[in-house]
Image (cartoon, rainbow, N blue to C red; front, top):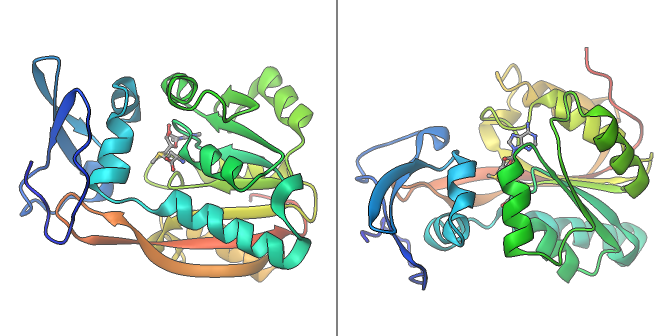
Length: 260
Ligand SMILES: C[S@@+](CC[C@H](N)C(=O)[O-])C[C@H]1O[C@@H](n2cnc3c(N)ncnc32)[C@H](O)[C@@H]1O
């Protein structure tokens, strides 16, 4: 497997082989792909084709965490725990909604911080199935729903869980979670609840087409969120070996957000 420059990773002991596109191919993140040889067949899988990545046990973690060295779950969970300790003591009473939970690494790290409960939610049934398969002990509940139109069963389960923190890692923008779904999840928190997220740095610019630059900028500017931490960091390497920068934000909710 050819290594992008500067990347050193453990070779996964897994029943598949992964190879990368030629480093000359400068692809945006939602265009990136890897070639996977599995069960005698070879296919290209886009990194944003989560159903495909989750369908092969171990593949998502091998590509995203081992090969491309994604550090966002650790960065965001640690930032939430540190800020929460500074302001409110240890996180052992936190009940965390993990939005865009995927196969559960964020939930696993939250559990290691000793939080009281974690509810995962994702739009893909394949994500819930992968979380059950890969990390069966992590989530108190895992709701498969589109939060732009969650439906009664999902709404009931969110309210029953009563989260007081929202975490969303590597799932905003790029056609993933839209501002409306993020706002719905944020509004489930009580005032005083905690928000921890990461997002690609350029998505925080004003007038950015994902809508998150305007929304998050407005939430901070008008005091909807009291910002405690903002940090730009390397989210992961691209398939061409370049550093991809994200921004981690942690803050405390002061009131619900209205979308215009
Ligand atoms: C890059 S993965 C991140 C998964 C996990 N947070 C992690 O850090 O490993 C993005 C996840 O967001 C989910 N997602 C995309 N659009 C979504 C939406 N509208 N609502 C909920 N989840 C969504 C995808 O299914 C995928 O599991």
